[in-house]
Every structure is written in structure tokens, then in C-alpha cells.
Image (cartoon, rainbow, N blue to C red):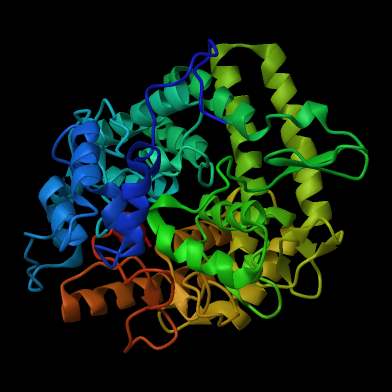
Length: 513
């Protein structure tokens, strides 16, 4: 299903590299010409694609043809943002991050024929490392730091980019790459709008109201068509007679172009139908948690991933936040009818969250497996989203705090889950966005002592690793703070947008304590 604009016309030309380069794309990944498939997919053609394809057709069967040399001649790989940046560990982390904003900054894009980049009309911040494009949920946490730095101009520019993507693609994709147009990421747009509105006033809600509503309609698409004979839509699932909750999904159920080689190998090992396997892999990517024991069966093997069967607690809390933000936006616009509509929707969502996701035994909110009609027992930091979005009941928030203290708190902060699966969104790793979500969630329910302890541990670890390596990392080993983090499909990345943002925001908060 190709994205369309409001009038039903196809969006800007969003052909992906595989669609453009066909057999050449496959050959480049099968060799492969670079150890990281994303580097291959993101490479910029140095001539018009038809010209390159004609040359490939003419040369590929000749004796001695060197595919890697052909790639290097006709494509240019992107430099990582910090290639030419030298850290100064005599500086504070705060000073280092202020310097990094310029390194991670990207001006408005210039369209390039055959490039996978979806051009954006305004400047933005990229995460760093192999990630040379804007990422949806990353950007909220990056904005927390931009706020501390007083860069509200850049926050608004990034919001304008996301509103532009909603208008042209139909939703906010995973990132501004053509191969991401089948999926989104956790819907943090409402929180971004709220962040800017706190600084600039309620007119910000009015400005972004059309985009907020389109975002909501994207996630709820097909909800009205569900009934007892048709319970599962793309991103909406009907539970019981009337409870409609959201799941992660991807409209493109083929091997991911940025990880083409790995996906085709894992498919063969899984023995599953291609569409089923790739849907579950891609849905996990939409969740941002790629990959985690949350999506795996008891053997913890990626081949048995089942993301599309799971209703995630974090997603549904973010949808609750989107609904309550729409209440504010319609109130600011003085649209009483829609204000009342979303008050009702948010109250229903609050009730449903507490009915389906609370796990009394685990002492934390957990995901729901809808084919089996049961709660899952994987304890993860997704379970504190009800606190962060203020969708938890008070006594349950207090129990969550006890569980975090007992099962998640480590010397370097909070561990992502209590499971060691070898995947990056599990133990022993800790991630900046989840530290922020937990700390703010605890503060929402007056669990200040634990919030301060988590903040202290996390900031100390960030400072320690920076002094030792000169880097701000994508993720950290919070269990053994003498080690760097690991797990996942690629090496630990340096930069790093959301780590920078959360560090500045948490450190700023300690100044007033």
C-alpha cells in the first residue's frame, strides 16, 4: 500500500532503493559490498539510476567483474556525523553535547535522484553513528536537550518537518527514508507539541492540531470496521465486544531493505511464511524495541518473533497521551464538540489500559497477547509508560515503584528488562529514553527518592563512559559499568541524539533539587 496525500493522490516519489535498482540492489547485499547493509542501502548514486543500471547490465557478466569496485565507483556512502569530530574529555559532558549539536545538525535537504532520503524542508538533528536521517521517537528525547540549550527554533523546525511528513506521506515514518514508509514509530508527536507549547503557549496546540488529528486517524485506521467476525485491523485490535486497542504493524511485509541480508538469512532459518515473519520483524522495528524478549517466545529466538500478536502497553499509553493532547488542542481552538469527543475517548482508554495491562504477579504493567487472551509475564520498562502518561492508578504506580527498585535498579540506572536474551532491548542494557520515562513517571506519582537514585546512577555512568571514551553512546551496560553495552544487529553507536537530550534534561533537573 503506497502512501497518499489527503486528496488520494500518490505522495511524492517514494520509490525505495530495491524498487529502483532491483537485481543490482540484491547483488550488492548478497555479496555484500559492505558489512552494514544500511550503508549499502543509503549510498547515494553518482549518476542517474538508469545510467548505472545500463552499465551494470553491460559489465556484470564480463570476466573479472568486481561488484565492490563497481559499487565504489558509482555510489557514495554517507560519512557518519562524527567522523571528523574530536572529543575533548577535559570538558564537561554538558560542554561536549553543546558542541555535538552542530555535528548532528542537518540543514533542509536537497532532493537527489535515486537516493533513499525523503527530503525535509526544515533543519533537524540526526541521532549519530550509522543513523544519518531524522528518527521519529528519538527526536522527542533529543528535543529535551535542545530545550535546555534554548534551541526552540530547532524544536519547531523538527515539528514542522513531522507535520510535513504527515501531510505528504500520510503519517510520520520510522525515519525520512523511502524504505521506512510502511511503518511509523512510537507516537511521540503529541509530547513534542506539548513540549513546545509549554514554552510558546497554547497557540502551538492550534498550529499542530491538523497534524495531531491526522496522526490519530492513522493509528486508528479501520477501527470502525472491526466487529466480532473481523477483530484485527492493521494497527487496531478489537478485544471483547467493544475495546479497541493498538498494536505495531508494517504495511510492507518484505525483507527490510536496510537489513536485507540478515532478514533473508533469518527467514530461511525460521521456516515461516515470508509475509508472517517479515511483518513481525518490521512491527518490532515500528515499536523502536528492535529487538526484545517482549516480542519473542519462550526460547528467545528471533526466528519465532510474534510482535503482531502482541498489544503493547507503551503504545496504548502513548495513544492515551495523544487523545488527552487532542483535548487540549480542541479546547485551545474552542471546538467544544471534538473536545468532548476526545475526553470520552481518553477516559475509555484509561479504563481499558488498567483492565488489560496490569499484571498483579509481576507488580508492573505488561503486554497482552491477544490470540491467547492473556497477559505476558515479561517485565520491562514498557510497564512504566502508564506512569509517564499518567494513565496508572495511584496504588498501582506505587507497586510499580517497588518493582523498579527491586528488579530493575542497577549501578548504572535501570535495566531495560529482567531478561537476558542477547537482544539489545533487554538486560544488561539501559537506554536513555527509558530512564527519562521512568524518572518522569515516578515523579508524576511522587516517588521522588527512587527517581533521584535512578537519575544519579545514570548521569554518573554517562559521565564515566565519556571520560573514558570521549563518547555519548546509544545505549549502556547498566549492570556492569566497567563494560560497554552490546547485543543487537549492529555495533554500539556514538553521537548520540537521545542520550544527549536526556542527559541535559536530567542534569538540569538536579540543579533545582
